[in-house]
Length: 243
Image (cartoon, rainbow, N blue to C red; front, top):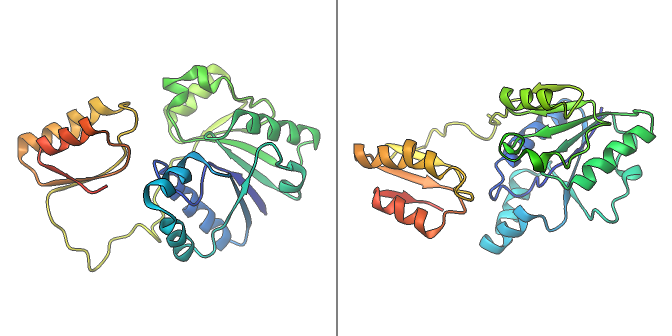
């Protein structure tokens, strides 16, 4: 099959953990003989922040580590959907896309008489926490929604935002995320996760920072978008920050 995917970024995982799942799924599809085209917006938020923070080295590292994975950058104003979707059997459109793009792809499918299967892939909590934002997405011409949690699937069904919805849990690509034989453990806890916009601050305090402090554990945190007050909280709890 020819599979076309529209995602925020394949290249950058800066505050964009979905990139790892996308890489794993794309790699597996290619291994099974499918043709995979991945489109991402030029100068997207994640890759722009990645380059601004770390330079171009992470991009070169990605290309060296994943030589088979390539994405095509597009400008939404000039994107030719007839060309991009020519011969497609399956199209996946991620939630982190401009609502205009989501609508245009749906209209394209309708005009072509349903030439391909079209699904909206949602891996965020906005359907629960910011439903007014999700109302901007026109999914009337989509076959359904692939939601990363069962609760999210139920929201789509309850609000009738889509014809159908299925649960598609994210998972780690075990070809990449596996235990190293040379791994040397130090400390008690390693936390990998972003701070964000204080949206999970209470949970991080309750389930990570306070337990580590009270139990006097040796811990290290990795992630981005930790403001100074968050770094101060980590330091006060004796938690190292690895960036």
